[in-house]
Length: 459
Image (cartoon, rainbow, N blue to C red; front, side, top):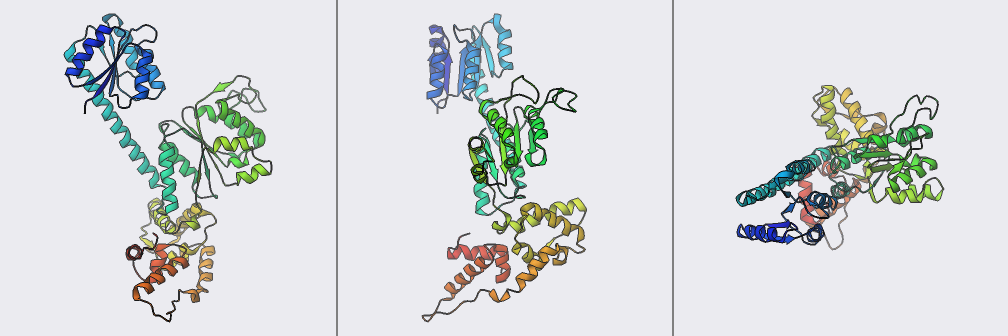
């Protein structure tokens, strides 16, 4: 397929000569005499491989055209043509991001080499950027364990929205990993090489939160002995994560809403308006619609922060993820505390799987850390778990009579149908937890998956 080059020069003779040479070199050439036509081609035609533009043109010159192309986010290598007397301007243009320059009168053999090099470098740059993105994604999702369908769907949403600057609201119970998810979003965004600043709105008084967020000027309040930048300014070009936004006062909500609408704010005690470029990610464990109906949260603010909404499921609804997370924490805390723990014994496994986890992932993490410290063997046992989990397990033992019982219908039943029904009832009893179901059925987890696939039971 021919590579496409857009040539921009106000001199018609230059367009004709350069166009003819590049066509002989195998390029598809689009020649225009001004910036307006160039932008129209770039916006309407996809797949321009390189732009070759004269630096000195009436009206919008070659450098201004490059700036306009960058503003409309068209990512294409850009080479300028310049006379001997304006080489300094060409060097300045390269500092702004222009790929390369050629000196007039053009060396037509050099022309093709420079354009090919520009196209090749852009291709390599894109491949490296994609590789770095994949590495960042792999690194950050490694910390967010999740094989259940709900979590996989969330991961897919994050991959899609993270590269944008859309405001995101993360909802979920305390301990479900909202801040960890926010960090993953930042790491996969175009702002990943800038700072991410985190503030817990519930941890500060109203006045302290306002000063922390927007900064203050000297003398604004007792103890304000000098000007201080707020977290918004510190996060400029990066990401601000506001946790527990449902606890923010109406006064601060109004000030935050204005910032989200206009990108401007005034520090506490100051009159100077400041402007920053910050992506805002928020989180809450509150029902914000209920807060709105009771007059404690601004509906306009919710519309601003909830362009994209992600709801993290509680741990009790995540089935097999409980034990996967448990084993993940065993490796982490085993290294941290110098303990060689190989896994979790069957009784402890059952207890962990059946516990309701009101504190979610954070509670599980603390539970495993405690068990690692207390364990004296190679496996975590029931005795190493907190009393509330052991007691819950003991209560569950009372219900042993609830084991799945199959009845034989008058017309009989095939072994295949009986096995299918047994698997379905066991999964239902175990709340969808496949590891626990496999233990009940005395088969491996892999064997259970194979049988579920064979019988068409949802995995």
